[in-house]
Length: 379
Image (cartoon, rainbow, N blue to C red; front, side):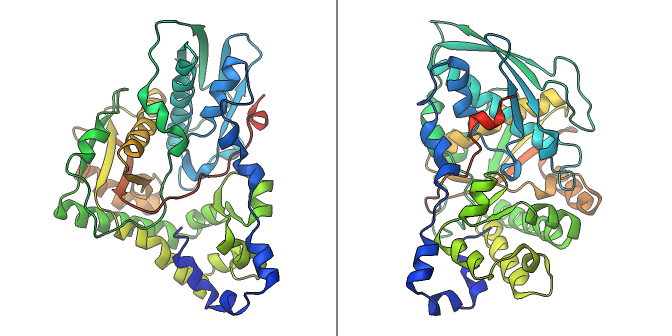
C-alpha cells in the first residue's frame, strides 16, 4: 500500500495532534523484526546456517515466509512449507507460495557459493500435489565443499533488494537497455519478456489496475490481505511477517485509531476509499512491465520460476530500477478468471503459464521488510 498517500486517512488530524506524546509514538521502530537484515552472514559459523540467514531475506507472497528447514542430517537442508502460512483465497493452488520457496532456494544456493560450497537440489523428492502443498519435503539440499565454484555477482545486491510498493517517477522513463539487462539474469528456464513502449504501458496499467480492483472489491480476497496487516511496532514485532505498516506515520495512525483492520474492510468508510486510491496509484505509475512465463506449470516449474524471479529482482537492483509484483491478474480464483484469461492472451505463448508480472520504474528508497529470525524457522 502507498505509504505516503495513506496520510490522507487522518484528515489532517495527526498534524493537529502533533504533541510530544505523538512524537514518542512515531519514533517506535521494529528493531527486532529488522535484525535479520543486519545479522545475515554475521552471527553464524556453520555453513548451512550462514546460507540460510540470507535465504530468509528472499521475496515471498505477502511476506508470509512460509519456509521451515530441518538440519538434523549433516550437510543437508530439508526445506518444507509451513502449511499454516498459505494464501488459500488469492493463491488457492499454492502456486505463488511455491515461487516464493524457489526464491528462498536460489538465495541459499548463492549464499553458499560465497563460502565455497556447492548445493545439490533434489526438488520434491517424495512427489507433490499440483492442487496443494503438503507436509512432504519441498527440496533436499546437500552442501559440499567446492573450491572451483564461482560466486554469483548478483549476490552483491542481496541486501539492497526490495519490492518497491511506492509510486514511481512518471517523469523518468526507463533506461533504454534496462529491460534487456534485467532479462539476462534468468538462467533456470523461464522465458522473460518486457516492454516500456507507450502502448504497452497503457494496456498493462489498465489491466493491472482492473485486476487489483477485483481483488479489493472481492470481500474474501481483500480480507485475506487485511488480516495480514501489521500496524505499528508492537504488531510487527509480534508477527514479523505479513504486510508491514510500521514507521512514524503508521505508528501514529494505529495509536489514534485512524487505521484499523475493521475500517479498512468497510467499503462505506473513508479509510477503505482512500486506501484504495492509494494502492491504485502504484499500478498507474508503472513505467514499464516485465513478465515471466514457463512452458509447464509443475511444482518443479514453479520452483525454477522462483529461482529466476529473485535473480531478476537482484538484476533490477543492480540496474537501479524499482520492481513491484502485480500478480493479481495471474491469480486463480473464479472472480479473476476473465482477467487471468486476458493477461495470458496478451503475454503468454504456446500454452505457457505466466508465473510473474511486475511493474518497473524509478522510485524512492524504501526500508527492508521485517523477517522472522532463522531460529523461528528451524524444525
